Length: 449
Image 1 (cartoon, helix red, strand yellow):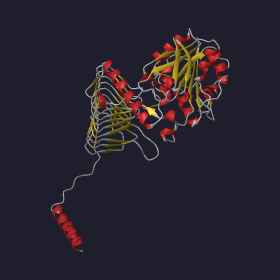
Image 2 (cartoon, helix red, strand yellow):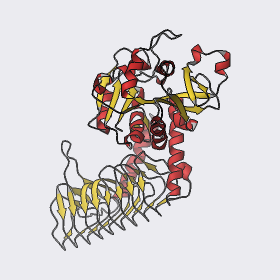
Image 3 (cartoon, rainbow, N blue to C red):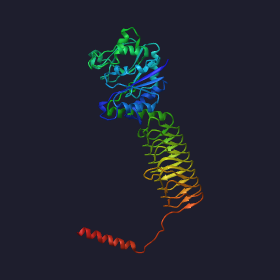
Image 4 (cartoon, rainbow, N blue to C red):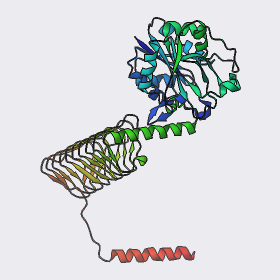
């Protein structure tokens, strides 16, 4: 059976107190919308429809960044969830199959739960995802008659007896496309909010003799994000789950609660992650590598047996080969560091290629930016770059070459050559005492005045 996804992402998210559309706030470095799409995309849907409204252009761009084939439709005025889903009717007019309705601000519903929803749909016309709430609060309640879901009642419209029910509505619904929009067409706004509730399709379907039921998942999967506090809580949930998964997969962490991951972080077995490391998006760390404390990685690839940090920063485009050493207070950006090379102290290497087994001395800087454009530095194999070397790009240093300490390299250095570019030292006898005497006298005069 073909699958279509309809993701509702039109809400403003007033409680966020933000100019950013709610679904574009991030968890693990990715928008909430991407998290919602990620689990569902594993179902290999034939179509994905994202319903936008507030900040429509930004949300549509984010949706297409995740999947270029996404179809977006707009709910310019919000009249409720049924009204939102109705905006997808035309986009699915020629679709035959199951439709799953999801929410762009509900990031944790798993692929396994969606599989269970589809499995139950094979024997029922409408299936709702519910959960048993520890504190039902203002959630809608699922009214069950045995295994049949007879209706969903919103909290505002519920009686005291119905509010005592702890089986709550997640909002996720699966139905055959041929039934779904017929049911939505029958929804009215005769309720406390004056809105068209998607939940009303259950009672309508039940009254028409269609088979309706609910399945349940863990309450944590249904966590919706409506405020900054809930976003922070969701980040905590994401990090906790990711850390547990990393440990389960053989990653060594001394203090996992201090390590922060992104949605796409990949770390190999037996890699060692020290405390207080941050993985921004786009990082892969291979097996047996070590990331030492207080390092920050983004858009970087670290190969087997490499060491990074402490206090190192890998920026996008950093590519470290096997057995590379990147040390304390070193920054690497858009640079390839080949096997066995070392950049161990207080250096910046950007827009560069560093050959195998080359040593970059402390305080070395690749001067890659001229104020308008970036330029490349290339250093060959088995070379030695002396401390405090300035490499003014574009420049090439050959194999087995060397630069003297405090050299400013402005011309290519051939293979095997040593570059020395610094002024000659001159010692002026007695000048220090004379200068200090002048300065102290000047300071005393200023104090007197």
